[in-house]
Image 1 (cartoon, rainbow, N blue to C red):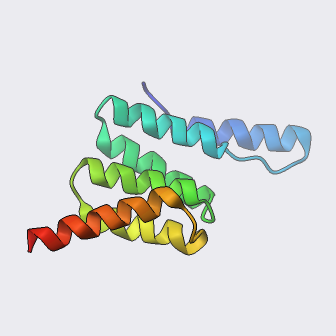
Image 2: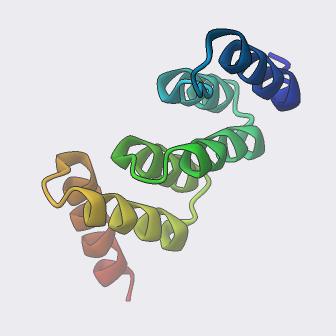
Length: 112
């Protein structure tokens, strides 16, 4: 998969101009691209896409949660925790984040 972000941004810019509304890449589409990269074990690309999603959708619980998942995949617990915590600031009932943080904290305590 070869994604050119500038082409994607240009597409939505032209779409916005043509139809007179401000459109940006859909959150779910960017998330799908990120997960596709994760499935191919292209972690830097996945992290890039998830960060891009946060840039476009800074109030998205899903965007922070998926970035946290990518960090977990490479074993970066600190950044995973940080991003799950960011997701929970937006939605304190985010079950995936609650469960992941509880598991990460239990594992951190047992490693000490």
